[in-house]
Image 1 (cartoon, rainbow, N blue to C red):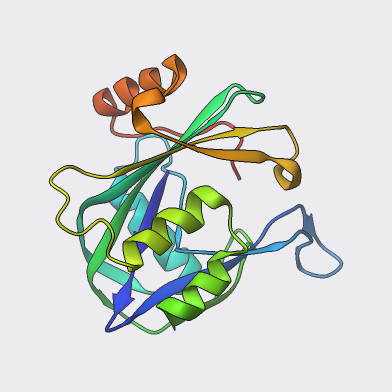
Image 2 (cartoon, rainbow, N blue to C red):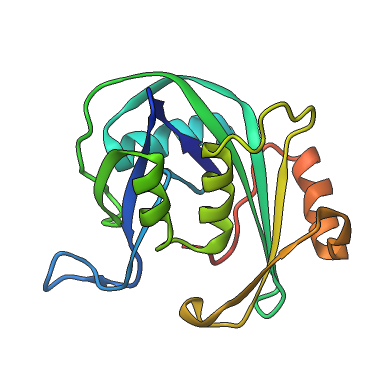
Length: 196
């Protein structure tokens, strides 16, 4: 997966994602609302930055012209689901257009640029593995890092609403997480089997 940070002066773009199944009677998904940066799945055969650009257009209508190298990485091990989620996060260096909501997946309901304080409040609705890295990056705690910072988590449970999430010291990663990292370094794309 890939995520994008679009920063304009002192604001960052967040999108409101409605989780759950699509309900045709109301024309949208019926689950809870989570505010996150835009991003999503890298389709098979797709380059990660092309996927990120596609996701940003689908979710916001903005066209990103250039991306940074990876700002930080997130890995989440789901031992009860037998999967590891990996996300590379990039910063948009330039983009054009206006925010237009026309998400073909019917997930994004709102998008707005917000200051760091408002971002912190909105990000509280997102999973911990999304909110903590973004909040720390906005606070500048990763400034001056020589290596790409990694945020590692384990999420126990089967129901997304009832997960117990723990942040890990990257040195304590499980063998599955290490195998994922090795796969990621050898492959240009990776798609989790059951995230969305």
